[in-house]
Length: 94
Image (cartoon, rainbow, N blue to C red):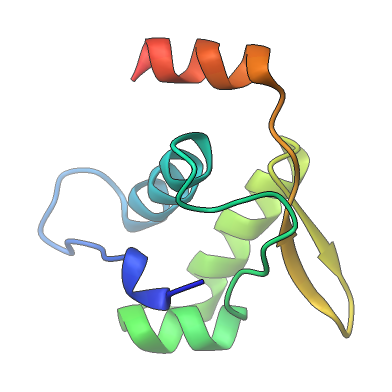
């Protein structure tokens, strides 16, 4: 997985955490990120995007609660499988 998939615009009216969260969800739904693929660490992603690590942690926490990712302490954060039905609904709404 390339960390270069992600970018944020600090001048956007949309909060940075929402920008990142939406980018991860869209990458998953469009197949750029696949089930089982490991995401960069919070530290790597926050450093690359020049944002606060707490912002990335919030995004990961919310995506975990929504069932998009799973964090395994000491191992990493991984993409979970997206059902075809959810994928269709999400694409239709975007």
